[in-house]
Structures are given as structure tokens and as C-alpha cells.
Image 1 (cartoon, rainbow, N blue to C red):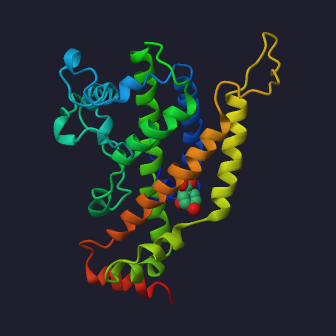
Image 2: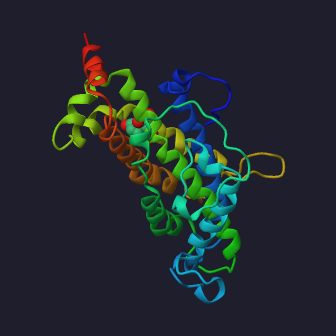
Image 3: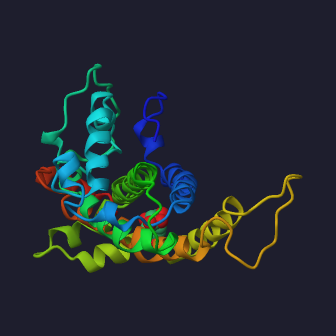
Length: 280
Ligand SMILES: O=C(O)C(=O)C[C@]1(C(=O)O)C=C[C@@H](O)C=C1
């Protein structure tokens, strides 16, 4: 999200604005998956320690790419932006070399600091998505494949952690609906999930995503005409739809619920009372 346009926090937090960002991120994710799919699976780059002798690193080749990329991006203050969360623990990353920008405060910090799902993203992407969109071969393009993996992973991470902005927006539009479920002991995660779930938005998303992937992944002839094939073009469209249905949307909801569970941490009782009164 571009936070520095001078837009007010209330505009940036409108559900329409946030959803337009999620729709925009679909394009980034589809394109980066198409980029990755042109290379073979190269299973070795996901095995922990497989390159230990060369890079002196116990994780996988892809995790090493993430670390090295994030070290560089941290210097350019990437992870000071409210919608960027590194896969590498922050304490292992260097400080920015340029002054940090000031951003409007959109998320509630005690809640935002508790929610991180990059480990889950890494697991489903390397374990399921890569095997689904690549041929089971090794073409030796370890650098090219890992570069694309980092791009997909960073886009997925932004998209899924965006759930915090969605949750903040929904909370502020009707705090009294959420408060009783947050304050119950233990917090009622199912009720919170029920409040944030919008089946019609999810259904439309999956149709839109499939249509976009079909066009972005289509093959065109030299005259610009689409080549109709019975095959799957540059990528198996259904795999992208499945990834959103089985992982991206469910994990976004986990992020939303987890954020809401902590949304009242350290909030003064007087503010909670005022929110509860706002129902009347
Ligand atoms: O758009 C929303 O309201 C969201 O909460 C985001 C999202 C999604 O991940 O795309 C998640 C849950 C809703 O059921 C619908 C869509």
C-alpha cells in the first residue's frame, strides 16, 4: 500500500480501498507464479542443508536467498513499512541506511506486533505450491528459481498479512460486535471468524482469479492472437485458484482473527465502554 500519498488514515482503512489493494496483489502473485513455473522444480533448493558446503548455511538454498535478499532490503528500510514483514527475524537484519519515513498509524501496535504467519507461508509454498506448478525435474537453474520464489513469497506475505488492515477496518466499523467475543475467556475465535467471513467476496475472488490467470498465463501468436490450446498455457490455472482457496484466504482469516484477539490488549476500559455505547 502506498502510505505516503497524504491520504487520511480513514481513507486508507476503508474496506473498499483495502480490497482494491488485495485485488492488485492478485496480479503480482499470478505473474510471479508464472515466472517461477518456467523453471523446473529443483527440489534440492528446498532441502535444508543441501548447499551447506558452499554457503555455510544450515537452512535451504531458498531460505538463504530470503535471508540475503532481506538483509539488503532492510538497508533500504523495506521492513519499516507497515505492510512488510520479513521472513528473517528482525534482530538478524541490519538497520536502514536512510532515515525511516513516517507513516499514518493504521494498525493498533499491540495487536499488529503479535501476528506473523511467514513460517506457514513458507511451508505451504515450498511443500505444495512449487510441486504443483513445476515439472518434477532439476534444470540446474537454482538462482533463477530461488529469485522467483523470493518474489512469490514476499507477495504472498504482504497479501496475507494485509488481513490485519482488513480486521482493523471491520473492527472500527462495528467495535461493539467484536468486543464481547474478544473479551470472553478464552476469546471466541469461531465467533470472530464468523464476523469477518464474507462468502460472496471469496466466491467472486476465486472466479476473478481464475479468469485473470487464464489471460495472464495464455499463449499469444506473433500477431497477438491468443492461441487456443487444450493444454494449460504457462501455468495450471486451477493450481492458483486452489492455492487461494486452500491457503491464501484461510491464512488471511487466521491473521484477521489473531489480530482481533489482541485488539483490546492495553486498551483502557473507558474506551471499551465508549465503543460498547456506540451501538445505541
Ligand atoms: O475482503 C474481506 O472482507 C476479507 O476479509 C478478505 C478475504 C480474503 O482473504 O480475500 C478473507 C475473508 C473474507 O471471507 C473475504 C475475503
